[in-house]
Image (cartoon, rainbow, N blue to C red; front, side, top):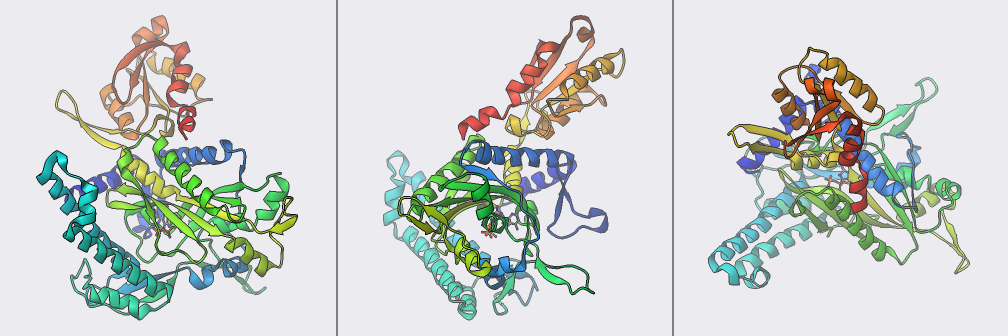
Length: 514
Ligand code: ATP
């Protein structure tokens, strides 16, 4: 990570803590590694992101329904899904630094550096040749660029082949041959590569009765598959249709770092779309576009998003792509879109003995639907929103302002009600306004400190509107409304406040862009 990127990432993390968005779990006991808690503003923002996703899926699509399945599931679910045998990460230790790494991440980071070198060559040439420069032609013909890209692709495909064949010594050999070094010790003194299962185990029932081993779910998707028939029969859906859910997932990540990007307990927002076999690519492309559109609807910099098509596919998939976001530490997966074929339903049919099929009136036959999945981490989404929206502005008077430029409808609080002074009946008047509006809006009431300081605090937590009650309010029932982004102020009538907040913060405008 460059120094500038590291600085801006540190700012996001400390802002998240200072303003009550994210805390380390069990902090007073020195914390629990890679587990985090959401504070008052964090919980509100997280709920707003979750609701935005849920509405975009369940409310906007008449052929998508939502469920909420349990975290505990029958242990055979994980046998059928392949998680017991194949939900592994390859790990490797550096003998000098004693640091543990995911072997695939080491190799991917190394390949990414080669791709970046190729990009640098192209940028250098663009500067040299000026307006007439054709970057695509240069990419296709320049020998240096071609060499970097070829090398990166060869390494990735050699490594991915080694993993698919479960050839762990060959996987290690890639790291040795490329002289990939430990970022901490700088040495290439590596152990063997080993497979490590990421599921957390637990037990159900008392020991006396003979407790059964269970797993904490590592993804929410299986709760959807095992409920496929229940939902199909009770919701009057027909193929194609989708089932969405939001919920906790747990993974014993080997290298869980980068704040809330990779956690051991996290939340997923997943949707499984059940389709006719043969229409996989049509729906895969459809959902790829719809999901990118959803991200773009938030109005963030489009350059911070890109697709990454998978070369190495999971055991269940016939196509897969990630939507990557340019986090402060570089482009990384934010959401996955997978064409899962009929793998999951067939596996559960086989292991449960129940026929998970539907009837096709055209062919007069039963069939097992195929599935397109969209899967996004709520916490990763939260991190992308924070990173994108946290801005520092130098104002005309030279002072620095920190402002969280959240899309208005995602802001933790829709408006702040601020009596100008803590006397002269201003707090009472402000409280009355608060009590009128609180039934429809999430509000903050704040009467402490000078008004300028209170505005800055609201800017830092992204509150779109500040409503200030002053002496004139007592005379003519008007207040000032301050806009977070322009900092402009307007005098408005108290009776109009409800409409003003609604128009500024309603989620409708965002949803219409999806
Ligand atoms: P990665 O390659 O980063 O480990 P993955 O490919 O294993 O991710 P999926 O199994 O496709 O991830 O999970 C879907 C989504 O869930 C991811 O796109 C990500 O947003 C989120 N996610 C997965 N693992 C974690 C985690 N440990 N912490 C936070 N979010 C996660």
